[in-house]
Length: 88
Image (spheres, rainbow, N blue to C red):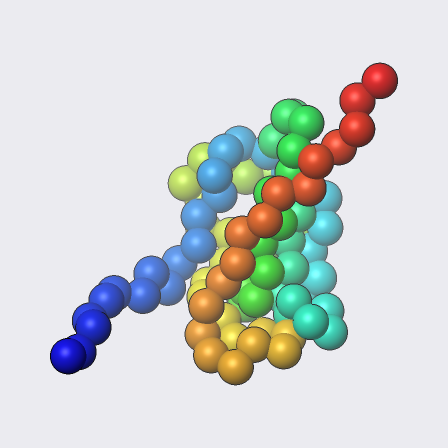
């Protein structure tokens, strides 16, 4: 049985914000982006290529990169994680 799916090549920003980290080739995660959207948690995008630059302002839906196979990935994909920040 075959499983067919469409790969979205463009990765878009979840919310308005600014790029606080943009590294094109970290060892494990490859092209890695971290954003500040003004909330307690910050999204982390990994294995992304053609990434935006640190300090750029983005709007929700802006293209921030494309699906890649960067870092130690063995195939094209991207990952999304959240970093929680401690508040006083």
